Image (tube, rainbow, N blue to C red; front, side, top):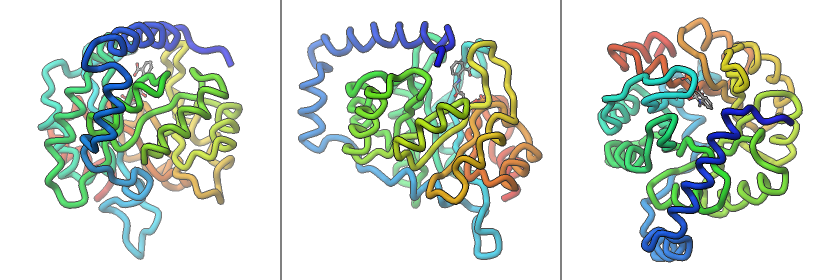
Length: 280
Ligand SMILES: O=C(O)c1ccccc1NCC(=O)[C@H](O)[C@H](O)COP(=O)(O)O
């Protein structure tokens, strides 16, 4: 697998960021572990169970698509998207509109995100009945970032197959599950899908964005659906989704969730846009 250069750059920077946090008194690994051992992390919900519930599901339409809505200020492909966003208000709007998961980008250099954004998103929705799950959307390379995610209120984390050696991927997957967080495992092609299935991932996301050239091919997800059909895996389509047609096509093919960032961040009325997209 040849990793795209932007991912290599991001991972190199995140490696340095983790090194700094890990050696700063107050946020060293043994301190994060001590806070977790004191049960200071807020309560978890099951990502998998929550992802299977959405406002469109009923006995007549058992296979409706769930929404993972993303908080994304900027990105490497688009630059600034919504720099003045209030993550708490955005999370609340997503939750009230029926999102099953709120994905919060916590990477600071290219996406202008933070753990504070994630914490605020979590706090804004905490009192709601049946709140959405919180996903730490991050470039995870160590257990440290997973422990940090749990402490700051995530219910799940992202693991990108293209960026992790098999042994590291297995170790991080087990560590996350051990903390009660079934991860979202991201793939982009058949080979990576085989790895994710072998890993035992229960939630697999196919990224439609080619991270070498940033081109979005909506068929990427469609081409991989058959590899997980008949398995107890929630298949999610990630990136480039912006209209009802995209969602309907995926639903008919057996995709169970869509992750949407930019289109939601640019929507004038988030709740109306979600109604249009999902038909709820
Ligand atoms: O969005 C990017 O430019 C990007 C570049 C390099 C690595 C990851 C990137 N995006 C992360 C994501 O997975 C997307 O934010 C997510 O799938 C939502 O995509 P979209 O709906 O197209 O904003």
